[in-house]
Image (tube, rainbow, N blue to C red; front, side, top):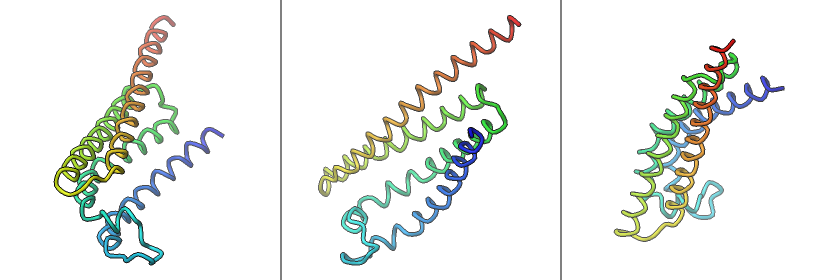
Length: 156
């Protein structure tokens, strides 16, 4: 069951590659959709002109994080779990989340000062920072587990 769950997770990650590409292509078009259309999204339709630049700024970090997640899932499928490569990949994901959070926070300040306040941007920024914190904690747990594993290997 664990292999199926990991494989399913890896498939979802790979679907996210395509969904992010779709969002990249669709964002400018969704900004022009009028209210009443089934493809009208309030945030994009009303505030898209403020959000499009921060969105495109974090896309590289999003793809890097997806690639790292994909590699971690691949390592897990190969039974490479408590390995320094996975810790490094988790640290990269953490840095990507911090970058996205900083872009969101800076965007919120600029939008609030120049235009008007969009609270959703700051909420997203805080969410990204929380994810970075969780990934960092997991990274530290993995690092400690690797140290314990290496000590045990030396004893045996």
